[in-house]
Length: 208
Image (cartoon, rainbow, N blue to C red):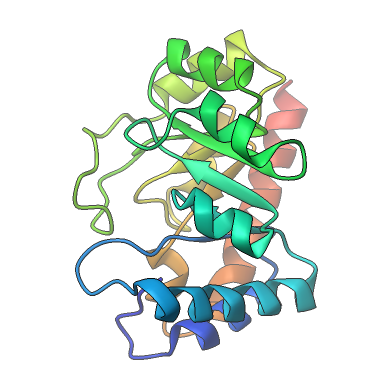
């Protein structure tokens, strides 16, 4: 979880938790990412903070780390370990999230026991170097229409100014990094995002 304004990642996380985030996912990848004991220690610190605020702590991709920490959940992509295999390894004690890009992948994730699917990148993003082409909100709307019981989290380039259409399309929530981590005031940025999400969900429910 990087920060361009030189704030320490744990400080940013605490401010985001204080601002009302409802879930945190540790994604430690790319150049300069922590490894081994350093990664474990950082993950434990993040997990402790999340527990203080009663917020679920998820690990991205690293199934061994998630199991070692007894994390609340694990999130895997299509290029990571297959979701069904992950589900067998984690049993029923942990929630499973899966990144998907098509209806077929969403259905396979649901069959594997995913608690939710992540869909995107909705908009252009700079935090994922291997991101797939921008997908917009059309596929979210498609999957939401075909599998309404499966929660969808929009991922990729989402900010306070473009979050509402993601919810209107059928997503239950959004996943952000830069919108909070790069903000001058991460707590205020989080509060603002939560307000926008709440309003968008109300608008969608009125339409429904």
